[in-house]
Length: 156
Image 1 (tube, rainbow, N blue to C red):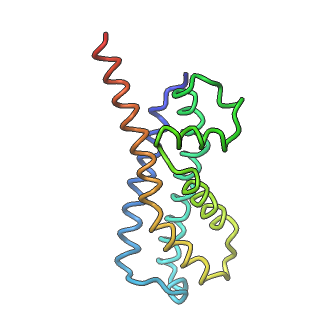
Image 2: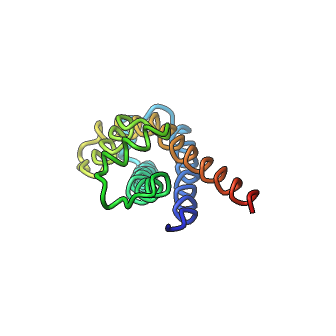
């Protein structure tokens, strides 16, 4: 079993930086397409988008498969991603539908063109709204693993 702690630490760093970036974005007030003419705003939003994509990808591509193995004892390569999501949903760690919405949002960021200013503003606003969902999933898994480690430590 691969150690999940480095993955959790990576996600935690993304989470901290996202919170900082969100606070800076919120200081700007209601975003408009005109804000995207300001290089400082562009850099801030690009940093937020990059970090959102990284956190979503790290959770989905690294944490979920290995956590699935931890929970089930089964090799994640023998399960489809939807099976992994359904298993994590069954254990109460996430809503598979909410995760698919986060994935869709991530893909929307990847496929945005520079001239799609309205879409970029809307996607950033949606990501800020949905960020607590992603953070909650991460924290539930982290707490579960911490509790499991504490059980193991106290048993020895």
